[in-house]
Picture 1 (cartoon, one colour):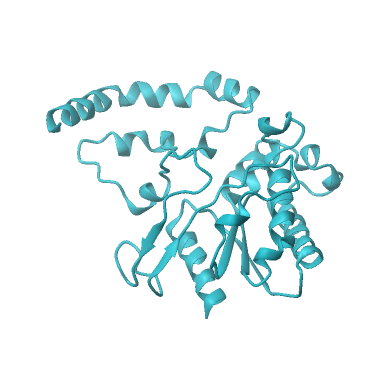
Picture 2: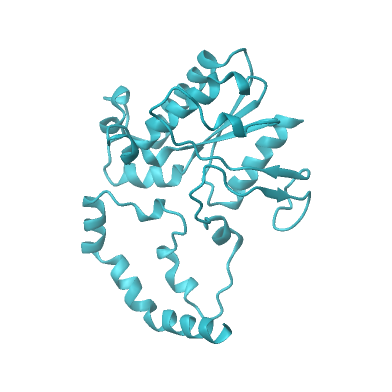
Length: 251
């Protein structure tokens, strides 16, 4: 196995200049833009760091690890146990068990995921701000992923099984949102209610923040506090923000 790893590392090292040239080529970037493919929005994106990663002495950093995802077709990801103060989570305030849930169904009023939320004390909801121009193929291509996420948020807020659960919402991937807007993407072209408003990061974040708060207030079975954050999960400081938010929810 070590010989295979060494051979693979040697091959990557010998090809790194060619890979960097292909990735940096204007023709490649133009083709990706025309196809609306934003590879930096995908799990395990490292093309901007090829030289560092293909180095023979490369050792993954904490941020590298944060950007990796394990493929899981199930609605529920394997649970993760976090021990207070244990590396690489020195910011963990207590021992806890974390479950990650992917909400998918948008065509039914039923919430098939609700049965998994038994004995839950807090819910952290991630809203991908960069997904405003990404069409959701699961729903006949007539809704973008950000709108779909807000639909799920409405369903979660109004679910009576979660009426006693504390909520925190995270406006996620704002770095990718910024790159898309700077490239000329118009937020209002994909979010119809946002037409004729400023096409900058701060304005779009304020708009979605208001929507999230309005939905939470209107749909919640009773009045409850909502904590709202802006983050990029592929960053250790923002991962700390997520867990700190959970600490505030519980304490």
